[in-house]
Image 1: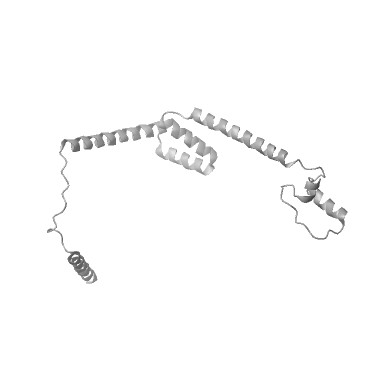
Image 2: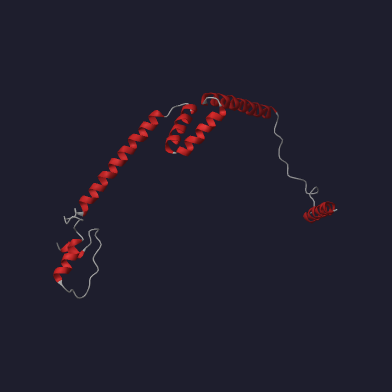
Length: 175
């Protein structure tokens, strides 16, 4: 009872006043903080924390079950994964569902044909990349040689040349 007079239900201390007027009203006001809207006493703090922890554990358990179900439905092929993602997205957002439906109608082909076309295109790209790697491996690599210091130009001359070229272009543009 003394704890209830000295603390709020959340555990923070009451602000003390040096002179208490009307002890009965003062005690009633402080103890009313420990009652719910119907006048019944609030549950102790540890009980409230246990209930919150139990609710959190139940939510986490439900979320784990949902993730397990989603993983069970996930497939090895990109086509089925894309179909599943489209399904989830269209269920989550009506706007996304309209966009997905419009794209499917505009394509006038099934997602399986899209996948096959993409797969063939990627196969061609893989073969071209492999051929480029193989042809590059046939030629010996040229060693890197540092540039000859005599061939280097003075940066001032380079910037002067660029400025002249820019001035000529601007003059031609004005006329």
